[in-house]
Image 1 (cartoon, rainbow, N blue to C red):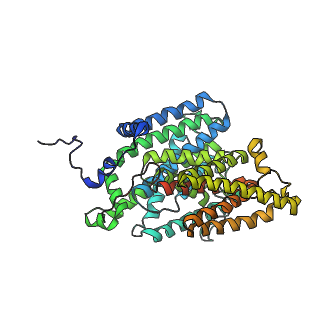
Image 2: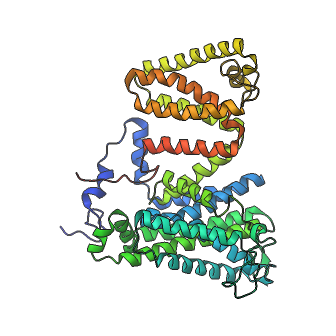
Length: 490
């Protein structure tokens, strides 16, 4: 019986059938969760993307809270950035450490063409294509000399490009052509470029300092590019990128234009970052050389989103950006961060500690150890228990009678943090009942460090907590939440 081109059982070009069917051969869990899991696998991916788009579009309609809408806009910008990085890293497997420079280049490009900086006020329909095209060209030029590089060498070159861009825009208030021309103020240096025009289409302003309009603009851009990438993912180019990611040498031996594929991946990823940069500049009406925008810190956050969601997964881009950015916002509040911290510890113990009697023993041992330490310290050093817990209520009251809380915890908190790192390293070397017993003082030390040091600086602590969440999830699912595990025949 002949099989047509639309037959799902027909052989597919460039796809190993045994590897492709690995996910179908896995054993699903039983019960209600197993039924739900099996049914969800039958739903086409575009249906999930469409559901996300509808749900996101409803958010500004059901709330007038400017903070929530601003967080939603930032999350959509992160999704755009992660979508572009997914092409370079997730599909083509190229380690690009200068990616956010394209984002910054486009933001500054939009600012120069739509602000009083140079007296230029182009229409948005003219600025965006020009800026995105320039960013695509820049991505092509960066990839051109490095197209033969792989792995660490490519990472070093792109990292140098990112740092070069940061240096240029941070010191761009005095730019000359090799010293032969008079110095010009191009980027504004530390002061950046203020008073940027908002999106202006045929004379009609979009936004007027209203983030809701830019939320919908970013959502439309993201949904269009998401469905475009869904089609590319199933095209010859998408399959070629994945082949390049898995084994560049094998892809080249099969006749694939490896260097050309790298150039296309860099250019496409840069173009999406450039589009996000224009929305960022218009929505914020200013771009500055701050320590958060267009730097390695932003790059790490975008990479965390991609890794968490699953490199190479379009749905993972959505999930990763939502989880990471929403988590970072929730963790700004010390009280919320404290609840997340203790919930994370409890969930990890319940998930990993077996048999159950050891879980009960560790919890009881940690509780008894804490009360004993608190009693000893209160008798020997009364000032050591005069501090306040990071959270109120029943939990805070219990912590004040259980954990040592000095009135001036900064120095002792720093020492305890170093001891905690050493304790965790030692814990990984122990086995059996010795490891279980060693967990008791380690858990108490973790709570002490949290209450006396980490919660004091939420800007740093929230990054540490997100890192811990990533480590725990990567331990449980190395390929990311929606990524596909690699199958190797040995």
